[in-house]
Structure formats: C-alpha cells, structure tokens
Amino acid sequence: MPSDLDPFERKILAILQTDSSRSNADMAEEIGLSEAPCWRRVQRLKKAGYIRAQVSLLDRRMVGLNAQVFAMVKLTAVGRSNLSEFSDAIRQFPEVLDCYVLMGSVDFMLRIVTKDIEAYERFFFEKLSQVPGVEDVNSMVALSEIKSTTELPLSQIEF
Image (cartoon, rainbow, N blue to C red; front, top):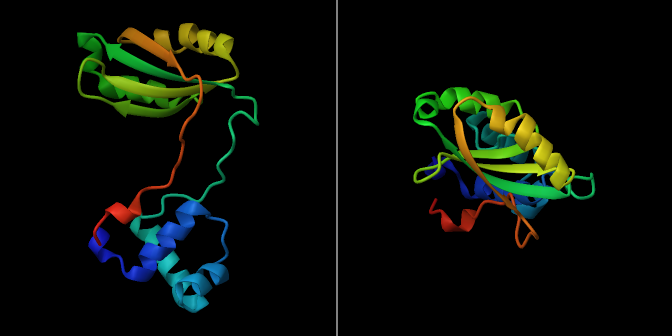
C-alpha cells in the first residue's frame, strides 16, 4: 500500500526507477539518510514487492530489433474459454514483450519486436497464428516512437 511508504522510501523509488545503477551511498546522500538506513529501506521495498527487479534497459534498435508491432488478437468463442492456454503460449514467445487482456472487441494486445517486418511475418505465420483459439489478428506497425518510458508517475499518487 502506498500509505506504508515513508518520505524516504518514496524518494528511493523515484531515484531507482530513473537510474537503478545509483549507488546506495549516492542515494543516501541525496535523500538525507546514512547508508545503512537507506540500504535497509531498499531491502524492505524489494521484500514488500515495490521493487520487482533492477535491470538494464536496452535500446532495441541498437541490438538490431528494428520492427515494433502492436497486435490486437481476438480469440474464437472456444478460445475465450481457454484464456490461460493462450496466455501460456504467448509467454513462450520471446518476441512478445508485453501482453494485456482487454475488454472490448479484441481479447489481447501484444507488443512484439523483431529484426524487421519479414521476421514479424515469419513470427506471425509460424507462431502467433498457430496458437489454438486465435480467430483474428490485427497487426499495426509502429513507424516511430514518440515516448517510451518505464518510469511510473509517482507524483500523482497520494501517500
């Protein structure tokens, strides 16, 4: 719960989601704590689940993943009764970075990255369209990226 966070922990979360490589000493100095209490707070935030992981974010284009596609997937009526089967299949595809269950005219939205459009075409025909229960896939190719962030708007939350 956000109310469980003290002002120091809120500052720690804000710092870490911007740059998780910051040292404990650096963070402690910035927020006005000594190193040991800062470290304990970070450990508590990890244990409580506020911090799921600390990773390095890669530039997909720099590593050769130039195509980003958003796919809206509609399942058959039979497929809808087995949402977990579809979900399990999607989790096995490394090309799928995000998958969301939706309400409305489609059942899932996927964010997929591949080397190029030809690689997406192969992924589509050889993997995605072969998942049982898939009725329709509407693929939209992203031409450019206006904003992409992993930083949550913590300032909007009342603590």
